[in-house]
Image (cartoon, rainbow, N blue to C red; front, top):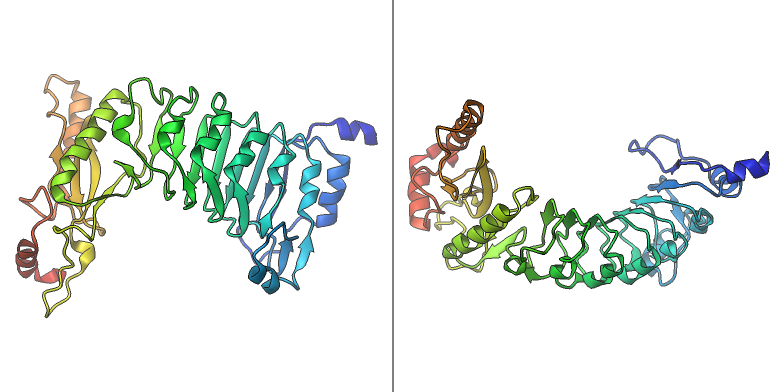
Length: 361
């Protein structure tokens, strides 16, 4: 019976506290140890928050201040995880890890990896060469993650989803991933990756459906414009890209006017401090039916009038499509606060608008 159990493929073990961190539903660690021996064929494991004053043992080169602070915590041995060598899925979210561990050197069959919110984990992208079967990669909010995005190229032919986001020390050019034949989702927000969306050719990113690039890329999410007059060129580039790839979703896209721009102002007139969140210094895509455009808007959703990049659809369109377009267009127009403006007002114009709208003060 015991040998039969060892040969059994067990799909899933969850070893973490649930979101209600006040509960005491942590799977006892001795149970995990026993299962690592009795059920070595486990395919899925999720690790996470262990509860107050619990931690995993430190890895190599830990943060000494953190280690000293947690010195009296109950310690669990992360190396128990290494016994599950047939894992296909591994999620480690918000786990108390500190230092560098050989975490990814023991799972040659891994297909799905998700690491999230690991503030003290030290890891380099070069470790991915040890995961030859990986299909989905999610590395989010790991501030000590290092490496160049081209390290992912060792997984070129099988990766379908790459999310390396909120990892500020990740570098490289996003075009190093352009020839991945199966890649359908790419998210590189809040990294130091650079590049230019104008470099994307017709044969690049052929399977891509969702794209989020960092602000260091020309045309990326959060791109900072130095001048208001720079915006049309970027928006026309995004528009052309969207037309080439009608199924592509530019997820989370927006641009902002840089505070270093001569067009930027804070709305302070020396006597009254106006709310800068109401100045429309962000630009976002809008759509009514299949018609695409963009508009300037403020952080608290006070928009200018839309600038349309597509012509208005023909009345010959199907009744339902045209009715949908009109309904969405009317909603976009209803939201407009800065009527008569298709770009941010000057500081003088903004002061005049505020004087006419006393309820804003």
